[in-house]
Image (cartoon, rainbow over all chains, first blue to last red; front, side, top):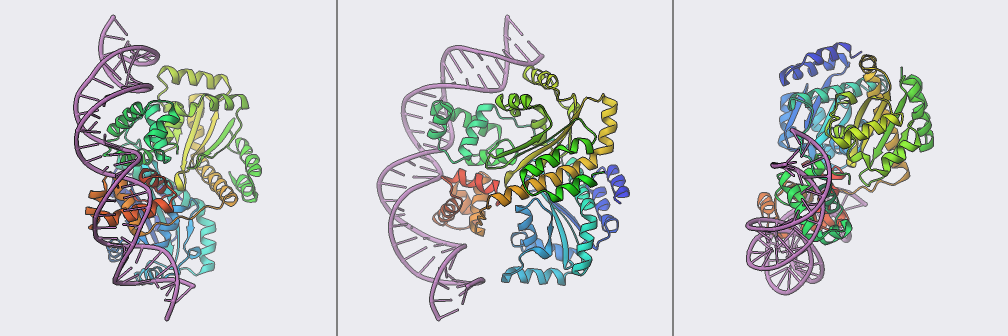
Length: 234
Length: 234
DNA sequence: ACCCACCTCACCATTTATGGGGAGTTGAAA
DNA sequence: TTTCAACTCCCCATAAATGGTGAGGTGGGT
């Protein structure tokens, strides 16, 4: 049922094309609203949505991603999230929910978390005003299509964002990886050096060269960047 | 074409069931070999494969994941990886490739990277001894099935894993998140405090309480753990 | 054959982070 | 209404990391 969308997606060459391709998804997937929102590790965001711009601005202006139960749940899960199974108790949360519904967001929703290299994180969401039964049927019928759509949309978005989908090629030497890994595990330099059976001085050299390669200001930064780039098996 | 597998998967209740369900995939997906390999942030590994145990042990014993171009590429990409498009030059790499082929791995392969919450990373791989043309046709026909299979296998694996070990739900306060985020971006305490318009002393309190919540030995460790648990939007 | 990336080791001075004390306000949940 | 978590501010002493500048050996790739 995604044929025409996937065909169209393969023709997409820039973000504008992608925008309009994604907007056709609400028809193809038979829902009222579609949202694709990606955040890269460098903080760049890309979002396409059928929501009203007023709501989008309100959401961003209030930094609602911090309290939005959908976002919070997706950050912790691999499974797609059905909105109605989340915890909507709490004052701020319920207030947010009412604002969202008033803004036409739809009371039913289904969100798929997507994770890419270098700490990229994206959400693919569909929402409607169905009742519970309709929505249950819908999600059962469409789960696979939604997963595939989210996958291919994200793939295309990453492809466009950086020309290829290859992450920047920072490569650490084995020892540099060892050093950062042990530091990420909470050791100090003395412990890490001991664990690798090298002198603390030598360890420092690795940390410093890793810091340089990663263009990091300090050790914590280097570890954070290395983790974001999937360089550490912690 | 995945119907019977997905049916079977939904019945799976433990790792042994999952093992045998995955092993049926080579028939269902019409390939010689199937591999699912997951590494969680805490370092626990789970793997199922149709490869010969001798090869698996050899691979693990030599820590080949460090030089395996398939693994290295998947760590950097979102797109599935067709083995034949990788760079197999380099002495160690070519040596590894020959060993793999001799062990019956198959010269053609297709690997899908999968990322879950808390830094989980998994690979879903199929491989065969087809020639280039056969393989191109195969991957075109089966891409979607492979993506869906990888998704549902990983979903089930996480589900089982989570059932067995109670995932501790560490939650950081907004300020704690702010503090760790800025440190992860490379700021020192003075800069971070300045950026948040609070005193450096106050910032320290946040860092320390975050460190306590995360059971971290030091700031670097706290940032690493927070990132692994998807607590930071860096 | 040569180059370059990698691995290994050392000292000194300075900047930063950490450990251990306290204290007062606010706002939301039970 | 009480309780508790979160937010804000402060000092002192010590431990740890960083910046700068070295050097020498090995192995793989062009």
